[in-house]
Image 1 (cartoon, helix red, strand yellow):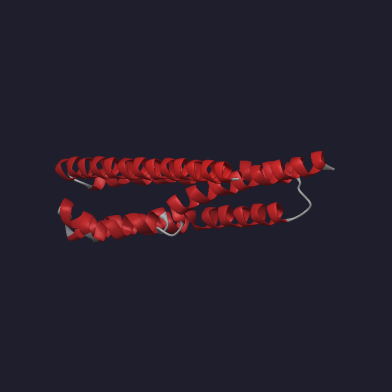
Image 2 (cartoon, one colour):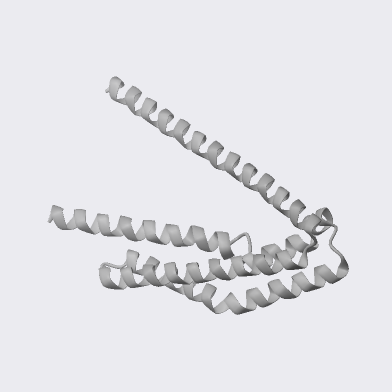
Length: 178
């Protein structure tokens, strides 16, 4: 009985990790930060457009490009969300089906790869619209942004480690009191 519970717990944990990984990707590509196309479209009309000194024609071309990207990937994005929902429901259910879980995870991985390739293709198209100076500035801004994101990740990691240390210290104090 305990062995069955343990296996169920392990299966639930594996499903949770799989859902978490696909959720993180979906949020990056299309969650609370907006779909990749939406986010890029907004940037091209906001501060980024200003920093790159885009012409009206460039803005129009880029807007149309990202609109097309968003529309062409809508079904893929929806399928990923549906698969995540199904994985989540399976995780809550008492009827774990490993084959179905593997199939959904594999399908999401393939769909995510498809979306990533489409995004990279659009980035190549974007490079053709920008002047060499704008492209150099874009790369510089992207490098700055990546550095800031790396710093944030490292700060979050340090905070997690501090919380773990604090939890361990708290547990040690509680045990010594007992």
